[in-house]
Amino acid sequence: MVQKGVMIRSLPSCFASCLISAFCLATPAFADEDHDFAREAFARGDIISLARILPELEAQFDARLIDAEIEREHGAILYEITLISDSGRLIEVEVDAETGDILSEEDSDDDGRKKHRSERYTDDHEDDD
Image 1: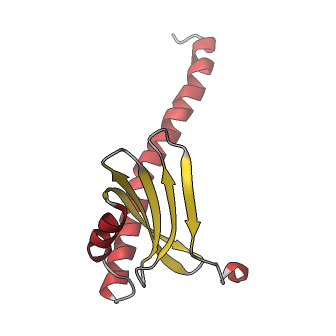
Image 2: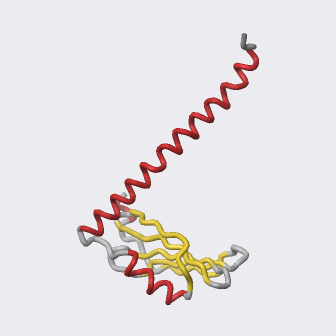
Image 3: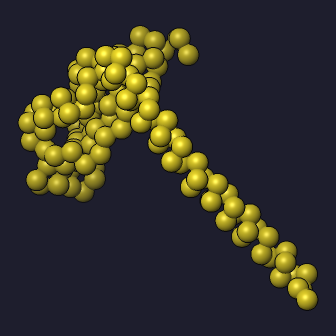
């Protein structure tokens, strides 16, 4: 026989477990959607491949890739790229996936403090949303 107090205390943890499980199962679906979107955009010729953009970025910033994402933002397709230098400096670069132009860059030292931010992109589509 289950005591009433035990049942009530375990309900919130059971609910939390169900929520976490549902989120974990949904995450791969979002990743697949982004992957399909990127593949289709490249096949249509809408974007430049990351393989073509990356060597130029690594040379320009003297750093290696640690993360890259493709995003849709205000009608534009962007690569959000994180690079790391040999000294441990992190550089976050936003690149227009259609043109290969660097839109912004953010540099942080090895303590994680932001040192430099350069915005080269002005959002002309801000009122379109």
